[in-house]
Length: 444
Ligand SMILES: *[C@@H]1O[C@H](CO)[C@@H](O)[C@H](O)[C@H]1NC(C)=O
Ligand SMILES: *[C@@H]1O[C@H](CO)[C@@H](O)[C@H](O)[C@H]1NC(C)=O
Ligand SMILES: *[C@@H]1O[C@H](CO)[C@@H](O)[C@H](O)[C@H]1NC(C)=O
Ligand SMILES: *[C@@H]1O[C@H](CO)[C@@H](O)[C@H](O)[C@H]1NC(C)=O
Ligand SMILES: *[C@@H]1O[C@H](CO)[C@@H](O)[C@H](O)[C@H]1NC(C)=O
Ligand SMILES: *[C@@H]1O[C@H](CO)[C@@H](O)[C@H](O)[C@H]1NC(C)=O
Ligand SMILES: *[C@@H]1O[C@H](CO)[C@@H](O)[C@H](O)[C@H]1NC(C)=O
Ligand SMILES: *[C@@H]1O[C@H](CO)[C@@H](O)[C@H](O)[C@H]1NC(C)=O
View 1 (cartoon, rainbow, N blue to C red):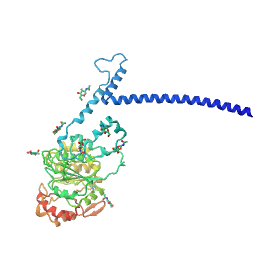
View 2 (view 1 turned 180 degrees about the horizontal axis):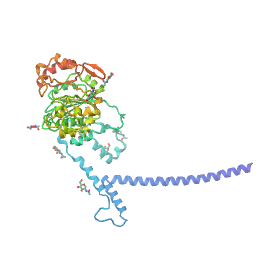
View 3 (view 1 turned 45 degrees about the vertical axis):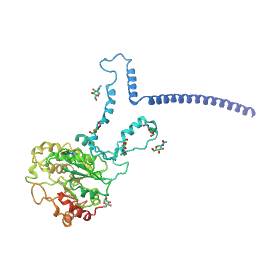
View 4 (view 1 turned 90 degrees about the vertical axis):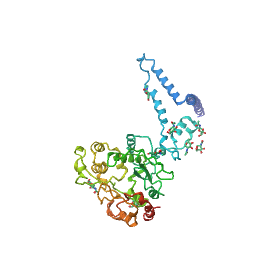
């Protein structure tokens, strides 16, 4: 028994010794791996500390060209290494120097260009690598400035992008984009200022005025810095559609814009912000007026050359002043099928502004369109232009007639709120509008 125990003990100590040796071996192996790791680490740190990014690139390319040398000489006229890599750094360093400061006045801007500086500090400043505040999507989602140096083609391409994932990984407050298509200033701006007051964060404003218009808007105004790059617009011509697409394109760049309203300088609101916001956001339909009108000023403007893309039976007429959702706005800026047909054949005396959207939307997106506009106007006097309203027209009674005077369908119910905006009001009407409207419409 004792012997056996001793034997057992002896075996145990042998085993212990064996395992101890194994441990030692293991330790050395680990130490070796650690040492190599440390060496690599130190070498890398040394590289990163002492060489700039560009230097590192050059070294790398020279290294790989060295590696490519041993195989017998390639034709000497061509460099051994791909020319692409040698040219990569030039466009990167060339882009930021582009000078677009001419577009912006020197008044305080909320958006400081923080991206480039934070980027460079990530590369150059080791402390910030270990401690930087989370950016997440905030830079990506930040609404861009209204003014920029993209041309139309670049703008519409950028604006046409749509996320494939519909669930948002952030909280979004949907906004209404109010897009003013004007010649000069927004004439009734003081009324609109009152309208927007207290509703910050629920709207964005875009103004497309004549390119030569250079009057500055005071920084306190909601219209300050809201002019987009513009081109000349001629009444009744395709340049009008181009301006509408330009406005939509700019408004689409802000992801929180979910409804899009086109307004003229002579438009006024007929309800307070809250009512208009709710009406637009809750609507199951878009508001692009579209109807088929026989006779010279309807079907008479159709051009047979528009076949086969557009047939006479598809030709529609309607007011250009629309209220649409983001889906339709995306379709309009992306349309490369119907708009070129208008560009080619709808001139002169064809009036694309009254036919392009009504026709395009009635062909492709009629299901969700109400075929009516929310902008009240009076054509009853006849002629090429609707009635204008001056000082003495503005009374509570008149305004209430525009607010509740007709009936129509909204989300499957009959309502007497059919118009949220009205035109055409002149600056002469402004004084009385400012006196009556805020109280009547219960502005904030
Ligand atoms: C590098 O780019 C410049 C301008 O961007 C161009 O003129 C030059 O030909 C390019 N060089 C090569 C090797 O591609
Ligand atoms: C950019 O343009 C503005 C105005 O045109 C000018 O004052 C400024 O010096 C320019 N800056 C550079 C870096 O060219
Ligand atoms: C914008 O950044 C510049 C340079 O980083 C700084 O001098 C300036 O004060 C900043 N402006 C604002 C409004 O933050
Ligand atoms: C690096 O970051 C620290 C801390 O944010 C800052 O104090 C320092 O000025 C930065 N250095 C450079 C070269 O940007
Ligand atoms: C990290 O940055 C924050 C804010 O800039 C600062 O309060 C904090 O002290 C920093 N931490 C370290 C370890 O540098
Ligand atoms: C604005 O344009 C007019 C001509 O259209 C010109 O006479 C005037 O000097 C311009 N003003 C400014 C501040 O550029
Ligand atoms: C839409 O209508 C419902 C009631 O039908 C209301 O509760 C909701 O607040 C409305 N939405 C908006 C954005 O106003
Ligand atoms: C709008 O007009 C189209 C034809 O252009 C028609 O199919 C559709 O039913 C109309 N929608 C409404 C709501 O009237």
